[in-house]
Image (cartoon, rainbow, N blue to C red; front, side, top):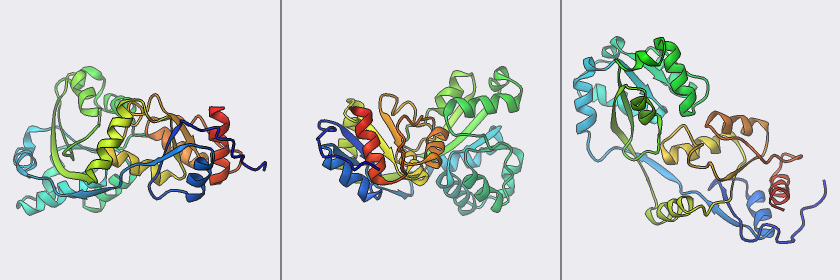
Length: 266
């Protein structure tokens, strides 16, 4: 493979990478003059208050569907059910949707039936799967959904369901916390169009970014950002979260990916 030059071809470009990602990639991007920005690392903790979640648990009979976007939502919700003296079996009367395989497995191991496990996580795909399951969009209008999630989320599914006529209650089951100054800087850059490219070096980094925003649909957040993936497996992972990989290297290494990004922007 032709060695990557150091011609500063990425000067003025801001490239987003995983905080614990490929060090070779970050080094090569910097050699090309790019500003390399890791996204903030997060910690999952209990919500400030369980009041809304407890009220929803007490009134489960008023819901038709439970939607769990990830293992955090499922884990905190199930623990809270037991801690408030309720039984997991009370969920038998509801339809349950798990948006990924890990969440489905966690629920089933806890003896919670899963009625729907859509292929792909993007909002449009999940909504289409729900519509097919219930017999069409009109059927959504008579349904009540409960969605436990993070206290602050960028998830678009609740709004999409409400636009379809459903009633949706979103309750805080946990919080995602991070270094506040890093998160403020990151949000400002993203909102102001200050991120030019996001580079993924493995499928787990895609999942980590989705958890930062507590959403399974990254397409709207990064619609103006070029997406680079180190290999086909990572490219498939970004597709599941609503993104399309525009940059893929001939050689699946950090150096190869940096070279492909530099070529793309040249």
